[in-house]
Image (cartoon, rainbow over all chains, first blue to last red; front, side):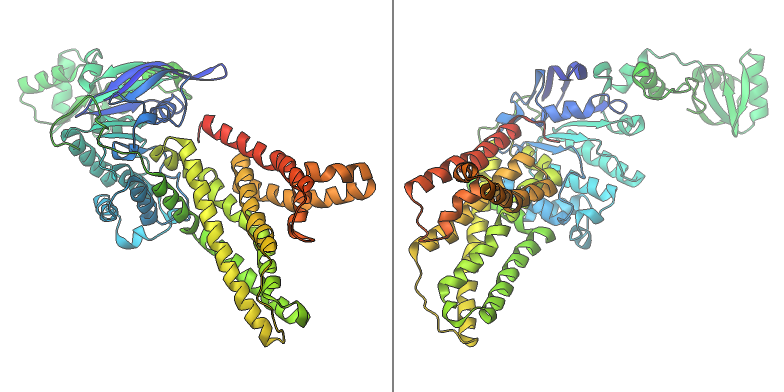
Length: 305
Length: 266
């Protein structure tokens, strides 16, 4: 539905987005993931015509955004929840949107309900909103015109854990009904929970893409965190098999794949209360792939999964 | 959204463009739906009332005609109407809601036209209210001892009250489009409307050559015949309005629109 074709955006000699191509399918949530300044926002701004591309193009359902009549009815956009007149009330912001799109005013109340902003909150001015409330209002604004495509830049930013869970349900339901969702984030955990498909971008280039399983299939699992009812017994059993074991918190860190640890525990009939891979999984993959594009040095040996 | 189908193509044949009337209506609403916008308009009208009341007390009884009061309210609006327009246009950039405005209507030129229509409508409404206030001021003038005449000079009405304020709206629009920042545009507007004419006045006093050139290149000076004498500019004076108007109005407006069409709106 969203088709990014060979997109490049340069600022002088600097390529904010460098020959990026990907597709966001209907019925799926596509997560656009990358460190700060990787080119996520620029790509999304090109999608909706706010930034002209240097070369390449983006089509949404076969159209350039610019050519979609009354685009709010087809594409819901949230680029920056704070980019609204600070002196307008939340309700007024939605009213202006609904009026532009030619929607009945009842839609405003429906959307306020959907994002759980109550009557008093909706009458407060935007400058008095918390980031989480602004984000909810922005999502309400994006959904106003009942669009079939959603483009959301960092939508989970500022939401509390309950808010993130709520948004996950909302977007999942939206995609299940056939909608196309493209959302960006710099927080892997967020995207991992919400997105069906992930596009990893670093320094303007796509470094990996696919489902979580596809992305992880190449990664080796060499160590595990495990906790048993009887840690001592487990340690004995594991060292007996020649695996390195060290204490980690209330459990153990084992230099073996989780499957091997599980096998040893099963053989010895030791009850495990927790077993997981100590390799960072997606996070490690993400950091490795975007290593040369990170701003800060990241300790490669994750202290905690 | 259709229930279960997931089409790769977006069918937009059933959707009409946002009509200009609706865009303009929304822009008009946006001029008044914030405290800043609403109170600014109310303050200007209040200022008109205050100035007229003072005038009713201060002026001598022969100059308390309806026309005098209309002139005074037109004069007050002349300074402040452009600022209403500046706030309407520049808030898109200063408050960054342009991000949403230009996403809902990606044809930026249509937003510009809508803003202009909204600005003119708002300006016209304020002018009409000011005209009514001038009537009330005249009645108040009777209380303070005046015996007013109610007749109006057509040229004065059109040039001094309507045309000058429409030009003011255009100026506000041009400056906003060029500067796209509320504070900057207001400063520029006052520099244009207060400092510039003073500077030109001083230079004209020093140099007679400059005095001859001034009305051709300085828009305020060129407009003087609209509001003084018999309110009827000569052909040469109209030509001066046209040339200086091109410099101060058309060129900045064209540059501003040209830029808005091309920039990355942040």
